[in-house]
Length: 125
Image 1 (cartoon, helix red, strand yellow):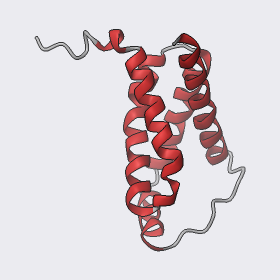
Image 2 (cartoon, rainbow, N blue to C red):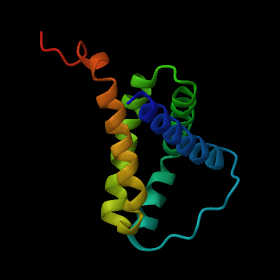
Image 3 (cartoon, rainbow, N blue to C red):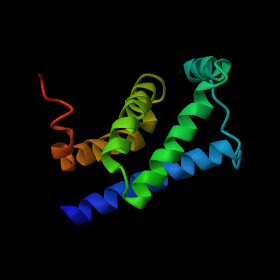
């Protein structure tokens, strides 16, 4: 199970690292969007700070995943971002769910692997 955890956190780290670096350094031009996805992204881009904040958060968490440091924290921080990715893909671009669902499953696997780290956090007192 430890090998699976290392493979999954490395793949997640590489995926988020690639995503954040290509956005922050403008390495690729995004494909043209149409319909409701374009409307959604125009709204996200109108809030000037939101997408850079998300990408910097992804970058920091991807480095943590790749280094194997603070992995439980990185999994918790990335979870709302991944949920948003899944929901946007589900409602606006269902064809892209083939990437979003495995990403969600990988994050849930990391949460399950590190479940003992969350016991005190989730304890009702």
